[in-house]
Length: 169
Image (cartoon, rainbow, N blue to C red):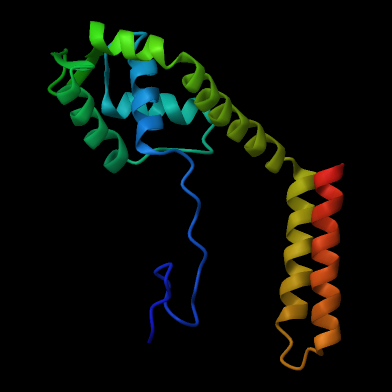
């Protein structure tokens, strides 16, 4: 079996999901959520998830290394809370960095919130039904072994036209 450039195995190639936020965006979100009060890593994950209405949940493997880096940069400091878990609070340097990055933070928050809107709209029963019907029809047709090229081209044209119609609606 050969491995494709994007890491998938031949015959089972899958497209890699686009990374929604880079590490600097995550660090800025951490600073933002710590500006309210001290928090544990889990609480930061939940705050980001809540802002995106569950459509984006950063993994602990993203949050904790960035917390360590922010601590090394002097932007946050560890505080001992009521539990044995480590909590962090924003430092004066972190507040200054956050103030300097307000415009970029606004874009990141807007992106998170738009993910929430997307999720709300995707969960509408009518949308779910239409997407399900679309997938069933497409998979049924594409599952035919003797599909003529003309039919494939018609499917491609129909998909392209549907995408244009949705974009322009």
